[in-house]
Image (cartoon, helix red, strand yellow):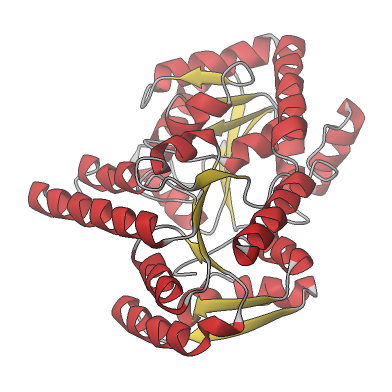
Length: 376
C-alpha cells in the first residue's frame, strides 16, 4: 500500500489469508493504523518501508524484487505509482497481482484544478501521467478490483480483467437501526443534543470533498427555522472548524461540532445511529462508504449526485446537484418534516446494503478471487 487503508479491510484480509502488510512507515504511524492494528489482535506481518514519495517508490521496488516470490498473490492499493512497482515485478517474476481501485484518479485530480490548487499546465501534465500509469497497470496486472459498479466501469477503460470489489463491506450487525428510545440514550452517551436536528458529516477534509456546501446548507436550514446541528468526525476536524469560521460561522457557535476521528469498528456507527440525517457532499466520488453505512443504520441520507453516489444511492437517498447548498437545504428540511417517509426510504437502502455490500460477502468474494488468480 502507498498510503492509508482502513483497519477494517486489514482485519478482514487477515481472516482470509496469511497477510503481510507492506506500508510506508510514515503514513502507517501518522494515520494511527499502527495503533488500531495492535489493538485489533489481528495476526499480520507488517513490513515498514521508510522514505517519502520517491524514497518509498524506490525502496518498495527493491522490497518486491526480493520478496515477491514468497507470496501466492500481491494485492496492491490503487492503480497509480505504487501499483506500478507491484504489477511490473509481478509480471517479471510470475507472481499474480490484483490492483484495488478505490477512487476515480482523473476525476479526483481534476478537483485540484477546480479548487485552484494547481494551474492548467500542471493539471494537463498530471492527467497525462495518470492515464499512462493506469494504462500500464491495466496491462500488467493479473486483475483489477474496483470498488462498486461506477468505478468498475471507469476502470474497464484500462483493464479488461476487472470486477466489482466491496472493500471491507458494511458490518450490518453493527451498522443497524435503533429504536427512538435507543437513539435518545445514545445521544446522551455521546454527549449530543437530544432535542435538536442532528446532521452527521462523516468525511475527511480533502480536495474532492465539499464540506463548504454542507456548512452553507446547514446555515440555510437554521435561517428557515430548523434548529440543526452539524457534526464532523474526522482526522481533519480542526480544519473543518477553521473552514466554518472562514465561511462566517462565529467561533464557538453551538450548532457546528468537530470531533477527532473515532474507531470505525466500535464508535462510528453510533454517530450514524444518533443522527437525524447523514450528509456527504463531494466534487467527485468513488463508492462513498459512509453513505452506505448511514443507510445500513436506517438514517436518512443526502448526497451529491456524482460518481458512485449517483449510481448506488438512486432511490435510497436524496440526491442533489453538485455544489448546490439550496437543494441540500431543501432535502434536509424535507427529512425533518417527513420523518417516517424519510426513514422508510433509508430502510430500503438498508435492504440494498444487505443484498450488495455486506461484510461477509465482501471478504468471501475477495478470497475466491485471490485463490483464483493464484491458481491460474
